[in-house]
Image (cartoon, rainbow, N blue to C red; front, side, top):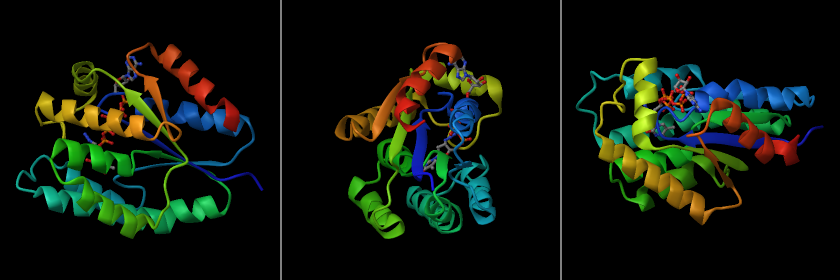
Length: 206
Ligand code: Z5A
C-alpha cells in the first residue's frame, strides 16, 4: 500500500492555491499514486453548507468566535467523513486550507487568542496534523488584485488591507516556527516558475 500523506495549501487571497491544485494532484497521479482533492471550509455536504454561511457577505453581524467555531465544526465533519478515511486507506489528501488558516484569519486577522484556537485544534484533531504545508506567499495587494479580477468579493475579501497583512505575517511566523512541515512558495513569480518550485518541494514524495 502507498504511504498516506496529508498536504495542505495555505496563503493569502489570490495566492494561487486553487489554480495549482490540479497540477499538484497530477504530479502524484502521474507517479501512480491515489490522490483526493478537498477544501476548507467545506469538503462535505454539511461543510459546504457551513462554507456558504461563512462566505456570505450578507452575514455582516457574524461574531468572530462564531466564525471560529463554524470553521472547526466544518473541520470536524471533514476529518471524520473524508480526511481520516482517505488517510487510513493510504491515499494522498490535498486540502485547500486547513487549521493554519484558522490561526492566520481568526487569530492574526480577527485577533482571537491563539490559546483558544489551540483548544479547538486539540479537541477536533486529537493530534492529527498535516505532513506538509505549502505556504503560497505573496504581496497582499497583488493577491487582492488577482482575487478581485476573478470574482465578486466574499465576506472575507471585504476586509481592509491591514487585515490581510496581519494574516500574511501570522502565516510567515508559523512557517518560521515549523520549518520542517512548512515550505514557502514564492507566488509572486510566474505560474510556470511556481510550478517548478512546487515540483522541487514534492520531489521526495513522488
Ligand atoms: N478561512 C478562514 O478564515 N479560516 C479557516 O480556518 C479556513 C478558511 C479554512 C475561503 O475562501 C475563505 O475562508 C478564505 C479564508 C477563510 N478567505 N477568503 N476569501 P476561498 O476558498 O474562496 O478563498 P481563498 O482560499 O482565499 O481562495 P482564493 O481567493 O481563490 O485564492 P487562491 O486559491 O490562492 O487563488 P487562485 O484562485 O488560484 O488565483 C487567483 C487568481 O490569480 C486567478 O485568476 C489565477 O489565474 C491568478 N494567478 C494565480 N497564480 C498566479 C501567478 N503565479 N501569476 C499570475 N496570476 C496568477
